[in-house]
Image 1 (cartoon, rainbow, N blue to C red):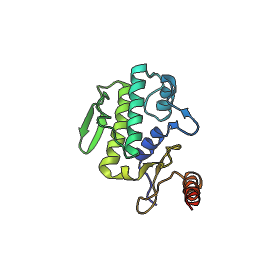
Image 2: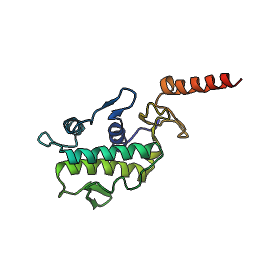
Image 3: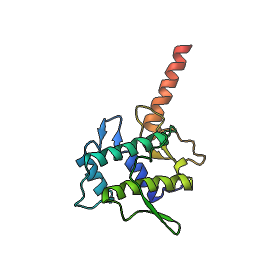
Length: 168
């Protein structure tokens, strides 16, 4: 089984801060977002997110989730105050950035790394529109469609079966 990289785990966790089925959002407020970024190790204890940066963080998440669903939004990273330094073979947030903007840059760099390495193909959004959970596809041919076969896959198959029965 192919294990996800640290970047893939970070992007997956970030994308899953919203749960469509439970209608919960770990980034609902600037304070919630501050807590998530701190818990994820992206900002220190003294850093607080303002409303403007909170909006940028939500915009980044929306864009990443759209890209993972196969509907990339043009210019998703364009509005982010992201400056990166290229040292050798590694992108790093510019030291000139504020701590919050460095956190945004870390998330953008993680996504970029997945795209460049091809790992982005294994990070997918559940095909069940009511779920939308992001998962790591461990299938050999990258064909997994649902976060879990037990829940979302079963629901989809039951709906398809019911539709076929009504058609007969």
